[in-house]
Amino acid sequence: MNLTALRDTWLMFQREHRCSIDRMLCRPILRQEFLTAARAVCDCDDEEMILWDTVNLRKKKSLPSVLK
Image 1 (cartoon, rainbow, N blue to C red):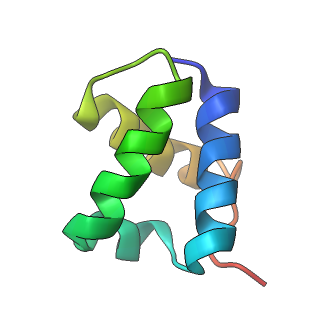
Image 2: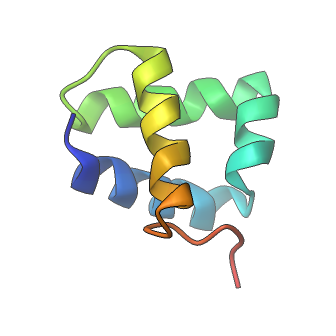
């Protein structure tokens, strides 16, 4: 898993959709759009791994929890 690419993908997705990780996880349309973007750049096709790694990046404070 390329965590730098995952982080960059999330930041672009967050800017475009102005949503939190929690909102993305709970909305199937947003989740699928994010997963499609992440799969294209992260060298990983496993949905669960992509989502857990995204949450873990937030927990490590590598991602902002909300957009300012």
